[in-house]
Amino acid sequence: MTPHHALVYQSQATRPLDASDLDILLLDARINNELANVTGVLLYGDQQFVQYLEGARPDVEQIYARITRASQHHRLEILEQGRVEARRFQRWHMGFSDAPQTVVQQLSQAQWKRDAPWLDEHVPSSPGLARLLTFWSEQAILSR
Image (cartoon, rainbow, N blue to C red; front, side):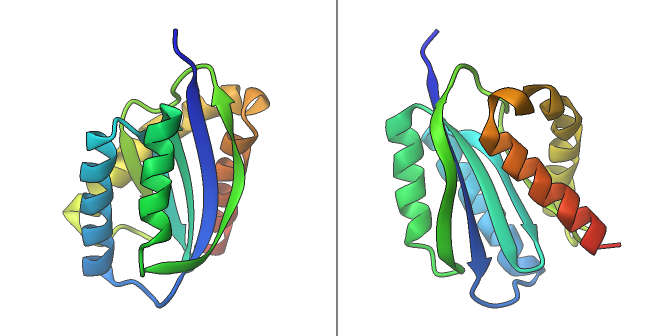
């Protein structure tokens, strides 16, 4: 089996994003990631993003280069990247620490919540997943 590449980054939204902004971001990312055969998850909470991308290294790098040009966020910082033996996600999802505001967001959140419990067993072999899940659990505490 061909090894994959994973990249995890965090960034800060340049302004508060409303439901329409998030829907556009979600749909745009889903289309572009699917075309590039990149899977993973984007988590959003408290005007912060953490995203885990996985796929062939050139594809992940292409998507990340596109992400760096996006105007919705700044202060991008790669937290972790490297080889992974297998994909952890079958598709690309988006999760929200606050309640999703639209049907599109609700569907994506449901997919993420179905996958999230199964990730714990892979954390020891993936520092990137550990960072992603830490962000998710911290946002869950803040949103209470």
